[in-house]
Length: 281
Image 1 (tube, rainbow, N blue to C red):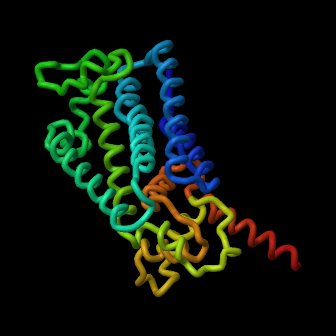
Image 2: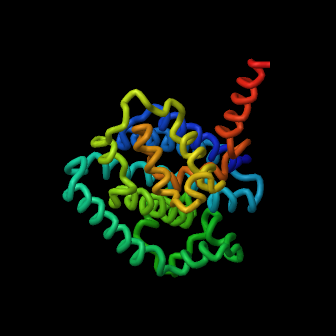
């Protein structure tokens, strides 16, 4: 059975774009993505259990690259939902302290449970020499002194190490998310509440489309001769259009792995402009 990573990522990105365009609260968007990813993972699990894998390399690819991407996003969005639904206030010092404490705990967990492990260094180094042990079913070596979580996994659908990669992915996404919440410059929600921008001026395309435009202007040094940072540039657009953008860096990295054109919005801008020009001919 063949499961293509690019197709999986495309489906996830499409759902993220769809929800972003609806301008939901962060908690609502995270909840909907949690449901979507959980259903996707359950569907793929059924297919894997029924059809199995054609060869060893296909099995390794699934547990090293495909499943961790889905599970990592699932863990991330579920944690974002829990974080946002337990946040005491929407702004102010208590709000900032809440995210600072969460970030401190995340860093501590990262140091104690992730980065000091041999597997983390193996994964980060891009090694493949032990893939046949780490990413094939039934290869768990209990002499390695594994954590108790190994006894809670479904051994028919996990090699244990696919879960570890998923948590690495989730923690990296959470780290970026909480940084944008802690720094007021990167948290436009409060600024937009007090902004003087005209309420009639709004961005009516998707958030990803705006992020694509912002990065294009940034990369081409079109504003302030390129001397303005991407975060400040993004903040200007958010205030101008009264549109909060969630995690622009993560969104940009998703664009780099898009199926099809990576500059879909810019491509459409070119087409729209040329069609408009032709009307005057």
